[in-house]
Amino acid sequence: MKIAKNSVVTVEYSLTDAENNLIDEGLEPIVYLHGGYDDILPALEKALDGQDVGFKTRVQVEPEDAFGEYDAMLVRVEDRGLFPDPLEIGMQFEGIPEDGASDGEAVIYRVESIAEGKVVLDGNHPLAGIALRFELSVTDVRPATDREIQQGGLNNPDAPAVEGDDELGEGGQYRSLILQ
Image 1: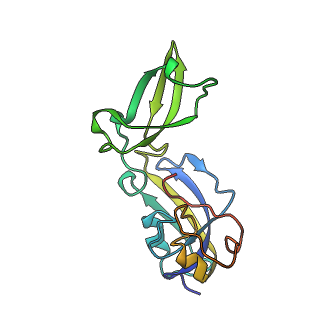
Image 2: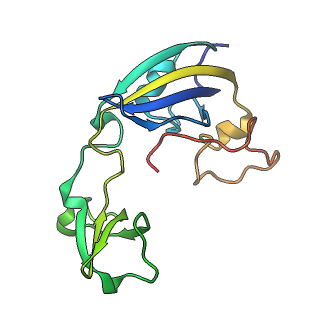
Image 3: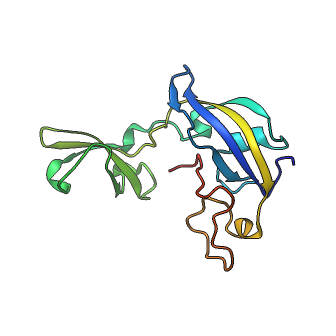
């Protein structure tokens, strides 16, 4: 079966930066609903469209087509007293950026460092500003179920509940490379 709209695709992958430094070994495959459902980066979906099981490719995705350019306006330094105990590097908080950096929409900030009564927060995606290289290998393609199509993708947390099958689909939980 060729990869086309409304097919469920399983892809083994590895992810490096443009200098071939390993970012993700891809220990679990990506399983996504093909056809513009935002379950995978559009550049990857385009590279896989029309292909079949066994297809292998390398795709380089520039920052603007992946997780965006790094935005220094999304880095904040706040007083430690504004945060709960315990506070650890890597914790995430939602907030509104200063200076209109995101048009007033909430951003998820990650704690980057804690020192001398200050907390450094970064609202950029961890892969922002990085050109990414994906090694992809298609291992399975199947038609999507009606439920998967009705949900508008396999990784859609806002999908309405659909009566019937309570399964997530073949393979259990799905993993995607979308903004998370």
